[in-house]
Length: 515
Image (tube, rainbow, N blue to C red; front, top):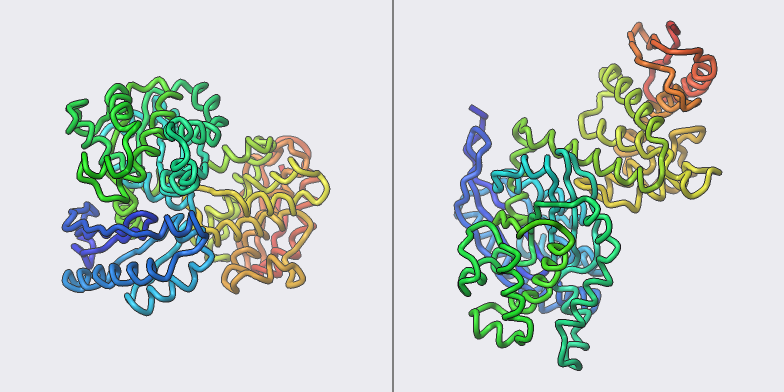
């Protein structure tokens, strides 16, 4: 039995359109029992997408609602919680002030996550709420997550993540952007449809080429759309929305105003305003596939938050599956920039081997190992821009990616590691390195020292080193190389980077044997 369990936890989604809190009990085995699910509408997204900032009135209402959430948490004697904010906060220029007011008034620490982190957490909830997900991932599946600010489209095939893209075309953002046009045209749905098409048209040929037969929908009030289709007798399915039902519902609501939707379906205005944009986006993506409808797993960000907390406490299979998904998405980015895949794979394998065999020296963990693997795969990605000083371009490209499950701070760490994979060494004269926190400076230096050695051992891009065996003796690390072909150039380059490794780690690499 896991010590300290069962334990009651809370997951808070500070969303753009609604504030939601899920309270659940985590058992000693890691299973989750939902105890309570509460929500309250908010104007955060509407403010941000229209003006770039969260209004004072919205901040006051936000703090009042979160104070209520805090009282409910106290009733349940909850100590473990995680509160996340998404696009409505991400794009607000006054987010820091608002976060501080929440901390002071509601005694809650809210973390703003990026698109890739949001997608990662949402996907974690799917595994426990969609029974056929493993089979779908093998035969091919498109997952479309409609947020208030953007749309995420991801494709799995043969069990691996093959493709993932983010488009700033969320349901609430569309409503705010086209608000003026809605008041001046009699055919607003057609305008909205055309605008959606203009945002996602580049995804269409990629998705169509993969002949996807399974589509999973998240966000966009899809659960509400399914329930309304059931109410209209368009379908009796419980967790599946047939394409004909979706098209029939679109036909029914296409020319209805927001007020008419509110009156007909007894909706809150926040729900009614995003209904048509969401239906149009889901319809468009469904047309790109060979699927007969949309699987509706009935989950949201708050379910994924608790699943992610469980993964932090338990050694779950889901944790390893999603680590593989992160690496798959990194390879996808690398291929977009035409990296030398054989070289990248060789450097990554050598770097991970050195990392594992020198754990007693660097004393870093599994998360840092992931940073090293990503940096190794992407270290030469900057050559797509320019061969000269490509490491600078590699760093810039990585910094501005959205890699599933990685925070902005983690992406920055990986970017700086890649910057120092060749001749350059970390220095306080470099603004990017100087700006890092002290702990991150240490992580970057240690991982860059390992990456330099690994990259040196494939300087010829011919993958001559098959494996490495490392033995420790005092202040020396003996490296035995098992090779195919002469490695005189690789050994020379390896020795050129030993000084930095010794400076950072306190022990010196030495070539023990080549052969």
